[in-house]
Amino acid sequence: MAKIQTPQAVRGTQDMFGETEERFAHVVATFERVRKLYGFKGMQLPVIEPTAVFSRSLGEATDVVSKEMYTFEDRGGDSITLRPEFTAGIARAYLTNGWQQFAPMKLSVHGPLFRYERPQKGRYRQFHQIDAEIIGAAEPAADVELLVMADQLLKELGIDDGVTLQLNTLGDTPSRDAWRAALVGYFNDHKGALSEDSLSRLEKNPLRILDSKDPKDRPIADAAPVIDDYLSGEAQDFFGAVTAGLDAAGVAWTRNAALVRGLDYYRHTAFEFVTDRLGAQGTVLGGGRYDGLIENLGGPATPAVGWAAGIERLAMLLDAPTGREMTFAVVADAPELDEEAQRVANKLRREGVPVFRSFKTNPKRQIESARKASVDGLLFIRPGQQLHITLVQGSPYALRDLIAKALAHVPDGYQTASGDGE
RNA sequence: GCGACCGUAGCUCAGUUGGUUAGAGCGCUGGUUUGUGGUACCAGAGGUCGGGGGUUCAAGACCCCUCGGUCGCCCCA
Image (cartoon, rainbow, N blue to C red; front, side, top):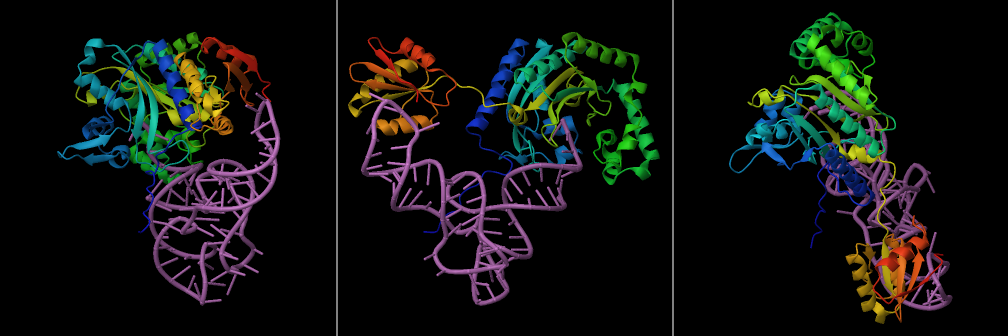
C-alpha cells in the first residue's frame, strides 16, 4: 500500500497550543473584561458576508478588494467573502437589524479574519482581532472614550511599555478634500524626485506617500503640505476636543501628521498605537472615525468611530506566560488505593480545585506523568486516610499553601503529613 | 506580486571538498537500580534526509521546479 501524503495546514494559518494558546486566550479574556468596564456590548457576527459588504465599503478598485480577499461563489451562485475586517460587517448588521433605535451603540467583537497576503512576522492569512466600535455618536467624546479604553487595555496587558499612541486628524470632508488636492499638486511638482512606488501611489492613493519608507521619498514627504493649514474651524475644534479629552484622562499621545487612511470614508480622528518591537508590523492597535462608511452601504448618514487590534501581535508582546491556578496531582500510593484516590480527586474538583490524574496505575508512573503535566503539588493517598503532600520544584507556590488548600477541600477524616518538596 | 535565508528522527540540531548499513541530546517504550518521590544505568522503537525531476559510477550534500517556514518590500480595510 502506497504511503499517503500527510496533509499540511493551509499557508498562513496556525495551530495554537500550549503557551501560544495561553497568551492568545489571555488577550481575549483581558479585552472582554476591560470592554465591559466601559459598557461595550459583545456581539457575534458571521464569518462570511455577501461580497458587496466589502466591495461597496472599501471600493471595487482597491487592491484589498481586488486581490486580497477570500471570495468564492456558493452553490446558489451568490458571491461570498470571508470577512477581511470587522467594521463593514458591523455596519451591515447595524443596518439590517435596525439598530438605529439603539444609537449610540457601543459594540465589541473578536474572532478570525482572512486576508490573502504573504505571511510574515505578525501577519497571517487567518488572523484574529479584537474590535470596538461606537456607532451613532458624532461627538469627540466618543473618540476619547475609545482611546482611553484602548490605553487601559494595553496597560492591563502590560505591554504599554515602548508603545506610543500616534494621533492625527484628517479633518471633515471639505478640509480633507482641500488638503488632498494640495498634496497631489505638491507631489506632481516633485515627481522627478519620487520613488517608483510613490509615483504609482500618486495615481492610486496619494496620501500614502506621506508614510513611505523609501529614503528617497522622505525629504519630499516631510516637506509636504500639512492638514493643519486646511482644517476648517469645526474640524479644528473637533481635534482640539479629542486631544483635550485625552490629556484630561492622562493618556499620552504624540502628533503624527503623516498618519493617514487610504479610504475616503475616514474623517477626523485617525490613530495607531505603535511599537518598535515587532519589526515591520509595528501597529499594535489602530482605528479612526469613519463617518462616511454607513452611507456607502446605502444607509443613512451615521457617524461612527472604532478600532481593532491583532490578537497575535498583542500576544507576542506579552511578558510571560500567564499564571494558572494551583494544580494538584492526586496519586494513589498503591494500586489498591486507586479508587480512593479517584474519590478524593473528584471531591477536590467539585470544590473548584484543578486536579491532575494519571491514566497509569503504577505510582511511579503517575508521578512521572504528573510532573510532565507541570502540576504544583503531589497529593499522595496512603492507607488509613493519610495524605502526604509534596511540592513539585518549579512551582510558584509554597508548600504550606498547598497543604492549606488541600486540607480545605479534601473529604472529612483525612490526616496530613507534609513532605519537604525535595 | 518582488527579494533574501531556511526545510535531516516527535522536538532541538550534527552530518567534513558528493563516497560504504544517516548520528547526538531531549522525548517515547521496556527493563534493572533506587526507594516517601525532579535518581542512575541498560536496551529498544522511530528517518520517503519537505516533494518531484536532473547531473554523477555514487547525492542529505550539486542544478532546476514545486510546496512550506522565516524576515524584508508591496499592501495595510
